[in-house]
Amino acid sequence: MTSLFAALGSKAADRWVQVLLLPGLFFTAAVAVGLLSGQRRALSLPYLAAELNDLATRSTAHSALVGVLVAVGVSLASAAAGLLADALGSAVQMCWTWPSHQPPARWLLRRRRKRWQKAADRLRAAIRASALPPGETSGESRHEGRIALLRRRLHRIGPAWPTCPTRIAERFSATARRTEELYGLNDLHMVWPRLHAVVPEQLQATVESARADYAASARLAGWGVMYAAAASLWWPAAIVASAAFLACRIRAKPTADRLADVVDTTVDLHLADLAEKLGTERPDDVRLLGTRILERLRPTP
Image (cartoon, rainbow, N blue to C red; front, side, top):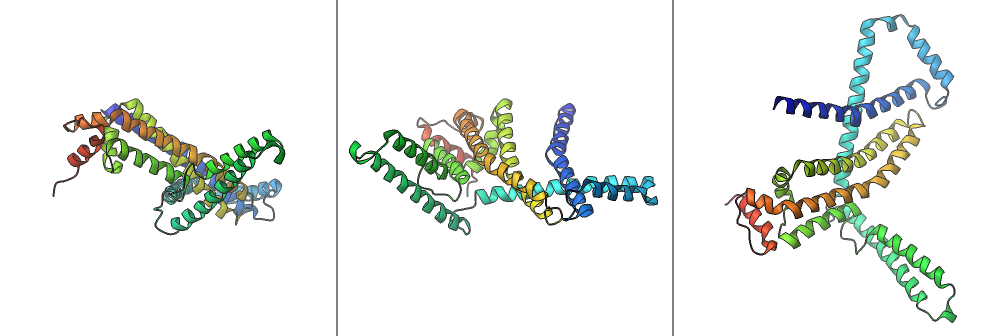
């Protein structure tokens, strides 16, 4: 057991260094360069080198205590930056799945529905145009290409009439509906901690990996916000911020899809195992399985 805790501590330390501390160190360096160079000499390496040399030649810079304090200060600043980015990433995840009946999610849902309706109208118009007699339209292949393009644009907004403000929320909502329709499980949040505990270690690792990738994609938006703020000191930070926002936009939906697929797989393969572990009688109709589990877990009044 001691060796297990040591291994877990080592993995946590590795994750801390790779995910938070190192990116925080780069951010701290960017802020330091901004404070030394300023906006006018943002890319002037000779000026930056001269400033660093001036700091190094000061008598206080040769003190061992000053060196230790600087190292500790940089480490603390990097750790704080990493924690802030992680907190901002958690806030981004909350925004992605914000309830659609509350503002501003309600306004985003209204806008998304307008975009979806407009894209659907264009697709229907293109399909009607392709159905005209050959003499009244030209280029059958051109129509097919346009229909395919408009269908992809519509699918990017949503495969069906939007019910959530974001596609990520739509995907998670689809998982919740699926578990309720197939197994009568209308409260996946209550069941999930127990379900995750009974699955094999390999599947647990897959779930944690998918969850970490999803969190990392949201954390990119957090770093983007922080680098955008740092751009007030050093304008090249705006380039890093743009790259972080773009990477977040590219990664967010695929990582959310993967996480939802892993959750679906876990429910399909091991919900019956959870019922057995809880001592719940397995019903003949699988659609009552989730209901029986929830009856077992919910406290009786």
